Amino acid sequence: MNLFMLGVGLATAVASSAPAPAPETASEMRTVAFELREGERLVAAPSLTVQLGRPASLSIQGFGLSLIVDRAGDDYFFSSGLYRASGNGWTLLGHPSLTVTQGAPARLSFTGADGRTLTMAVEIR
Image (cartoon, rainbow, N blue to C red):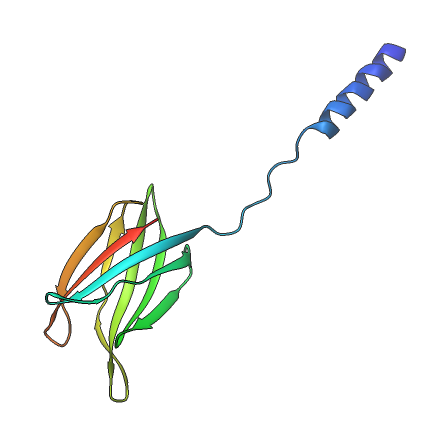
């Protein structure tokens, strides 16, 4: 009987001394670096830290960018809306989206709604 009680006591001690499971971590954060060109002209090259799966936005040099970055397997899916400041607000130029491997720059070019060629480079760190 004493051996049984000792065994139960040891099992309880081992169970209570086992590390507790790690708490769920807060949503992941990533830094997204951009380069925006209009034709050959560099418009801006900002970077910002975003929470995966949550909308973020920025405006710089007469352009606005709304974006969401989320996991896509081992990569990241970058979805955005690109806007140009106009007299009474913002004009949507397009919705560039692409899949990006962390640490590897990705680049896309498209013709905006205003007919101008825009190039966006994206790197997720």
